[in-house]
Image (cartoon, rainbow, N blue to C red; front, side, top):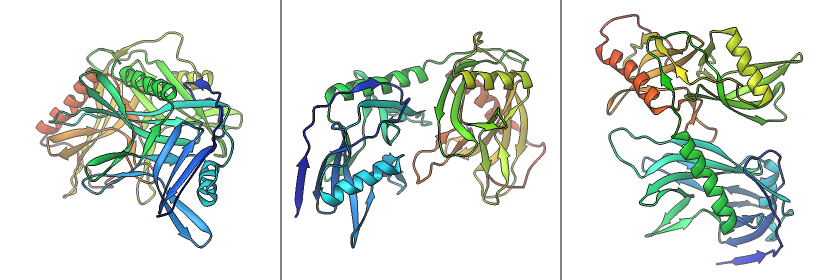
Length: 387
């Protein structure tokens, strides 16, 4: 079995930043090849193993680490968001030598945090997360909990009776800082609290958090934003467009197999819509915020096509300012509420586009819908598109 290991020893000087504000090109500082698998180290600290190497003549393709569930579902664990980084990794594997130079900055951000709340069972896993490094590579991870509190689990695969690391941060000081950022994000995600006001009343709705990530080469789309409303409701994947010198927002929509578009978010108050645009443009929350939330069921349309887990198309209106689509699905534990989300390209965990962050609000809103589903015996029905 051929094994080649070439290491480049460099004195690394990192300027650490907990937000990936600017891209800094990463270099392949180590590469090793064993049979048809490769291991690379990026910038001297991010080690990625179990890279499948596919050779065809002089050409090389790589397959990054994945996780395959018991049901056979594939979840990518590493994703190169920069084609240039993928080219550098392929070059390093092909030549057996380092490629590129070490970036002058370590820039990262926690790019995903999706709480895991399985129905009817306990789990030590608390959230699916991901960290993006230098805007070039995104690595999946999980937040677990144990006797000493939450901790971060990085991708690994089982080989016989042992677990083998697929991703490892080999610089302890960097690993400690990044894992702290992941845990801090997790703890923030579990600390949202709103004041629930019954009756579907008209109340102020404000942007209490905002995050904006610039994009290039996407036409009129200049950025992707997420906002949290009244410390309770998070809307992600908002496309920030510049058209005719004006900023416009495109909220998540679902497009079915026949190309029909279903809007998932509807703004009911033009003044509130302007406030959201202003917050995104400024990249700052509203100067005066509120945490009061009132809600009502504004759409309830049973779906009658047989053999589908989808049972009802619904919508909830919050503070009479915004309407959010949702669905009632039938599962092992009865009816449950599905909020807007999409499948990621290449497979993996679904990406939430709308999340009810306040656990109490999520519980009462979803109970309102499932109670109606359990007791409803009539009403309007739909036999149209199953999306």
